[in-house]
Image (tube, rainbow, N blue to C red):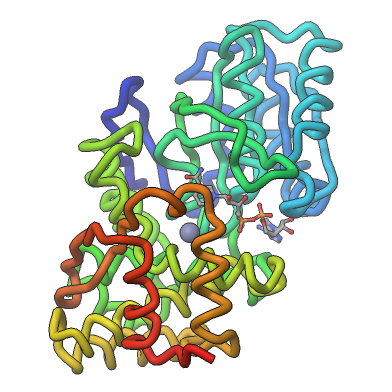
Length: 354
Ligand SMILES: NC(=O)c1ccc[n+]([C@@H]2O[C@H](COP(=O)([O-])OP(=O)(O)OC[C@H]3O[C@@H](n4cnc5c(N)ncnc54)[C@H](O)[C@@H]3O)[C@@H](O)[C@H]2O)c1
Ligand SMILES: [Zn+2]
């Protein structure tokens, strides 16, 4: 079993092991001391893995109620949040009881936000079931839901009591959802470790899941530890996301997050090479690895369309743009620039203006 200790305003551990789902109850009971659990998940995940999770919680003496919601990003709303809150209240759960979020990033964000706000904060266990949730969203304490005005606009920072990650659970993922997670994994390699990046070239993610998750969680821990509340260094995690978000928004979210981030990484890598910030070999290695995982590295949108989509983002418009740029494999820097400069970066990155 791998244990990674996360030093945040509330310290907690991420445990990673095959078959851990069947032992989840023991850990949740031991760490939280809870008497009752609300097992929260989307319908699909609960139909695949809910029974095992529930049996494990009950075997550890936790009285368990199951709260399901329709899956997908469209489930990450105030309405679903309200339904989860009412579910907790109706069953008279207490602050000392635990909410177990079993699922991908949607469940983690929604369940985390419900746990953070129910009676001003109840115990929280995250059990990520997508690669993205395992390597990214279950760690770091960001929780929340979407508003009609934009993604993640309503939320707060709330650290879980524990995170339990069972790589076997990821084997039921549809290939395209798994592939999306691979884009984030490659992001960690490009950000923080040349050796890890090369290991992704020689050994597929699916054949080294436990190691991959542990490496990514440790890298996220190190970045978040210096900037829990996202005021500086945490921006590094946005590698590929500035252009990626523009692609996602322009496609009205028909391009998945992982595919959009992949395009975003390829564009900044090519742009950095064209501007002499990294070598041409570095950019080529990035594009090659993304393609090896079946991820896209080109976009059909014009530079103009992406530029307009990026500048309609309230976080960018009117302020400075923080673009994360590779210097070499395993090393990136945050460049602060006028938002208008994005146009040059798109063009240098091979996206035609018109
Ligand atoms: N909190 C953070 O720091 C953070 C970081 C990155 C992303 N996010 C959020 O994460 C969300 C995306 O997460 P996601 O990609 O995991 O999406 P998701 O939770 O919607 O899961 C994707 C799909 O996979 C299905 N699924 C999940 N686990 C499965 C399994 N083991 N087997 C079969 N199917 C399974 C789900 O039912 C869903 O249809 C976004 O809302 C994003 O904003 C949060
Ligand atoms: Zn992402």
